[in-house]
Image (cartoon, rainbow, N blue to C red; front, side, top):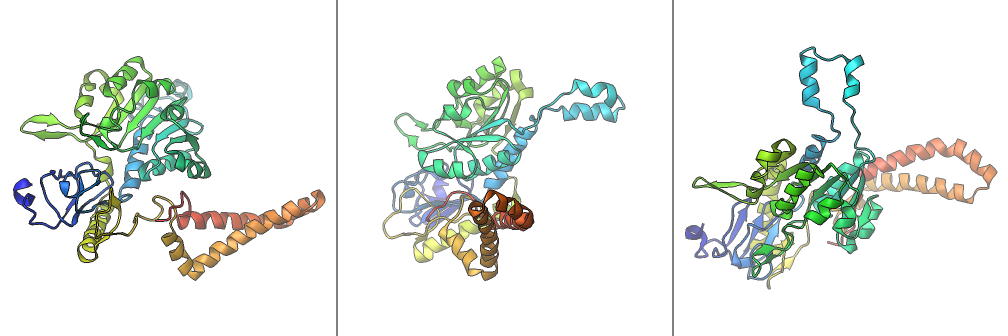
Length: 399
């Protein structure tokens, strides 16, 4: 890489997982396909944080958010509810099971009503929280205070600290990213964030999911939690590299747990975000569009870090429904008169019904419920469907 791009012959670069060394030079910028930019180390934009340098650093956030969140939920569903599906399949296939006599030996619990802690309210964290909510779980999200209003409006519990989120949770999933790199300490800000204190507050037998960055979990603390049974299962998705016969990467510390706890571990090579091929194609296409706009117009979309002089910040671009509601999104819906009319009509019927109920006497209210209840139910379902279809939920952002 240094031999090819160390002399500045290339104006820009698009990368996925390949590490871009600090000594490489790209005067017009770089795009990381995906959200994390830790591998984008070129000094042209100040390294993985994108702070400083002569060129902008960009990413394509949200492209694989749903794929990652769904894989994280799959990890949870493999062990909760804890019905031993493989064992039962073997017994049934061999004709070794009597439902009338044997089923009582396999009690299980549903996810509904269980408490789920989500650390982070970014694109993936929010998508994962919504999946938990769809299964009837009580979801607590820890994020910065500025997110509290939107977290609560979406029906989640806001947790001011990670400890508050973890307290009494049956499962915890972390979606924070590594944070800024401290060159003096030679570590990322969020490294080891999930440690003894957080893990000890989970319910006994809880599930830990880290489909973000391997470094976020204190592996020694995880080992202690596995040994005590406080953590019953852990699912980790982190990079593992093999060069010259030597293993390296953030997955490496977890491999030391396999001998003792292998049956209670699920280890993936940072594959969760790369399982959805259409999403990867969409991300690549978007990266090309972004780098083209930078080269031809100096327009920067999905800026990561600081904006260098001479460039224009064009805001964020994410797939529909990812990251909430934007003016651009609302403008597109308003331009479609049929959609706008549907939303206005259904909303008006719902609002009118409740306004009449509030103004009615007790006797009038009973008559209204019978005469207009079905019309309200139709409009309410129509409005709910339209809001889902057009991704009208989540936080509002002006960019």
